[in-house]
Amino acid sequence: MPALFWCVVLLLAFPAAATNDGWLQFERSQHAVRQFNFDLTFVQVRANQINTFRWLHGVHQAEGALPITTELEQLIPQDLAGTDTFRRGDRVYYSMPDSPMQVTVNHYIKELPAILFHDQLEIMKLYDAVPGSSTSLSGRTAQLLRLTALAGSRFSYWLWLDAESGFPLRVDTVDADNQVLERWMVVHLQVTPGLSAELVQLMSAELPADPVMLPDATPQHSSNFSLNWLPEGYRLLSQQLPVVTHNGKMLASWLLSDGLHQVSVFVQPSAGVPVQAYRDGATTILVQPKQQVDVTVIGPLDVELARRLADSVQ
Amino acid sequence: MSSEKQDWLSAASDNQGISAQQLDSLLQDPDLQQQWLRYQMIGSVIRQELPEQLDTDFTSRFELLLEQEETHQLQTDAALALQPVLVTPASGWSRFKASANKPWVKTVMQGAIAASVALVAVIGVQQNQQAPDDALTSPLPVLQTRPIGGVATPVSLSQSTVDSRFAAQEQQLKLEQQRRLQELMQARQQQIRLMEQTAAQRKAAESAKPAVEQQPHGN
Image (cartoon, rainbow over all chains, first blue to last red; front, top):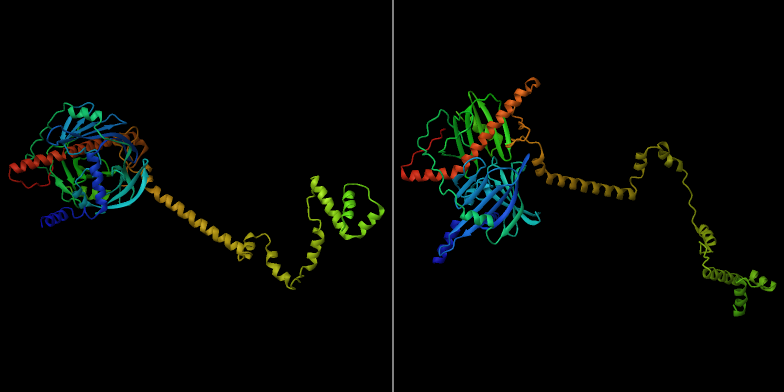
């Protein structure tokens, strides 16, 4: 009888994961980026730019009776002097060349593809996983897994996972017409049994322990602007730090999230520019002038939705 | 045929002397003539002087074949049947039409159709596969987050009119705009980096105090 009870509990706990092979594959790849010790190089391909990064990851096992593990991670830009990023457990450190190190609380590095780290149950609300054919990629056999957006306005993801280990080798962000907007691709991968020397150093490095406490959310001064419409599945996130820019005032700003993606809306005094829309990889940037202000929408939306969102600012 | 006869014949074919009587018998006896030819041929083979045409009976046999061949009488309206070809001797198409029903033409045409279908399929498949890659290299409207020399290309939504007199001013405005957008991109990056911490802090604050309904408003 207890056995039967546990069976029922298990079935209720993982209803979809147990039935869909695609989600099982996806789970395996998410597990791989969290558990493996690896040293890899990936490229990020956008319409007219290619950026190369080295990404180190390892799991440190503390000596002692309790199995305490700490994830260590390092992200190093390879072709430009940018920000070195480290992660130790749930602290992410941003080390910039000419400013003090920034400490944040994050359970993954936000500059890496969120789809690889985000809670699977949240992703399952937005996407359908369909396994595709297998191809040869970087000299390995890769299995295609299509994460197709349930809502047509959201971009889809095509993942190529290493057939042997489940490790993600390539992630394409595609629009509704299956046009590739952004490509993330591993060009070199080395999985090692132990931690690399860099990560051993990082484990014992002296780093500021605690992030700067953000100011309390309560004294947010009211503004004259409001956002009257949200795209389907998105909700408004509270912000505690006012957005600062070097020139020009920020009249209002919002951050929207559907769990996986974020959309930013900014209101600034008008600069006298016409309507403009740009695309940076999978990110759309829309500048929409209104009476005395410019509304800027930045996020992984198509231009039509961004327009509607900008129009809803009053 | 006695061996004696063969001896003198063999000797004669090796350029030995031959009597008048023996010559007479050779001229009269077809068996001997046949034998003579055979000896000559053996000699030729040994001396490696084989003639091109081994079959010495070719002409006589061909004559026989010609005689046995059935004769076909041409039809009286042969001139009529030939007319269309004669009227348009230069047109390759009509010649082709005239021969279109012949089996070899049919075979060739079937082959050509099959080949073109295969070609279209191959090209179509290749283009299909290339389509996603093209999107990465095609000149999409793009924001250069780290501009090296150029500026971002606006998409069709933009209706900026470029007047050459104001080109410099326009350029200045564009750079200004570019800088502004980059600042906003950085601000957005900062928002995302602090997202988790904000949520965690908010949760802690809410558990300490009674929850306050969050309204969408700016800061």
